[in-house]
Image 1 (cartoon, rainbow, N blue to C red):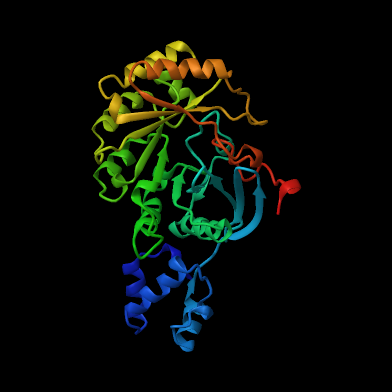
Image 2 (tube, rainbow, N blue to C red):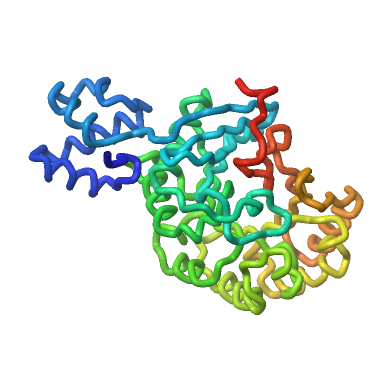
Length: 349
């Protein structure tokens, strides 16, 4: 069956026309799914019984199967099984005054970041746009309040799955879809050069928030930490980011995972500031203290070392914030998502 959540409004209208129905039927179905959270065609009472039966035989709405939900004080991690038997993870994060959903875009990841648990399994396949959207729909049904923020920062490299991510963003921000503000949708990337250039030319994707993982201001070291990124890419990456089209008052977020004894020295902070010299107002830096993982040989820096790093950037005019990742109780914090690793039975509900 065709997954409805992978279709744009125009595609769904074309589907109805091809079956001899009026195109406005698409708008009716989209309202039921994205506005009312109804995923059973039989409950769509403004459609004829005959049409509901035909839709049930040709379109699917939810293909992901929820298999586990792990709750903690600041987050909920969902495990979903795909139609082909793989497991993906989605994390709902409780902020001070809103909810943020961290969605996965791939099963595994090919970037191979040394400090990231997802990389341990390699890349299995891309998620479809429908599988990305369904993560939101299922989590929204459990949330109890509207999820306003979405971050493409779960399993996988979003820009390596460009077309499906773009389709998912279109559904998220369109009035006929989830109708989220573009200011509340963020794509986080390791910094793939060609897709970033494409994103800069894309009127849809360049209008949402962009976060880029830096992790070292030194080319060779960054290549070692993030193996898929070839040497020489950092200079090219910064050139793209310094000219990336931004709306007024928007900034590009640079994500920097601080790893004890690896990239947390004073010289790293000074070199990072030098990398941004002359463009300080265009960027903000999120320092993310490394989240220890039993399968990886890295440690978190001391709080004192973290604060020294931050102060060096602030004194050079760079907005810098320390982000202690939420979701650690559920192994859902930054760098910890890895579906094959754990099934946390003790806290499952």
